[in-house]
Image 1 (spheres, rainbow, N blue to C red):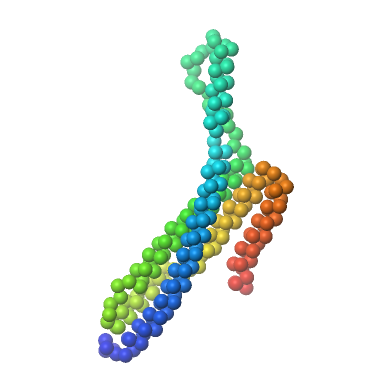
Image 2: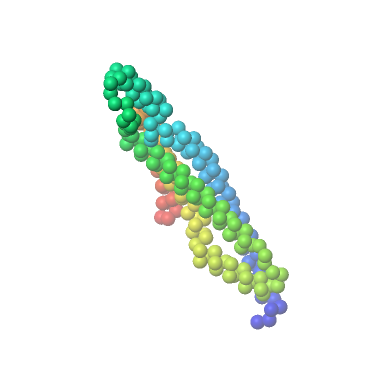
Length: 211
């Protein structure tokens, strides 16, 4: 077929219109996801900074242990003072382990989803850049790039990102519910009811379109 055939121009015109609409929709979806992921990560980080201290001895625990050693040495000055300092005994509750575990996983997944989103935006920018003016060459190059996007499951990845953020939110809410039960049962029950409704809504929003 001649490089100057009309079909090449018609194809590139249709392809350009299709690609502009598709890239606009994909970029808008990723931008929304990035905003949510950024705000969510900031919230989770604030909670993690507060609760991560429960995974190890605090400064007060260390101070108390040192004071006990001083009192012990004053009471029994004849004791051997050259022995190494005893280890500080610290028991981590299962509640703290679960809460911090869920929140750290949630934070890691949220940051991972944001990183993947930024990477895909780079793919989309490269997809539309540097197309030649020749309609025949432009059509063939565009088709190769489009086939590459499909091969790398780009539409599926973009569609999965909101689901990943929802999973992160659910994990955070589960950890929040567990944490509240360790503080106040009344507040925890009321919050858990709200959290349950949010989780059910998220699950339904992903399952109903598949029915």
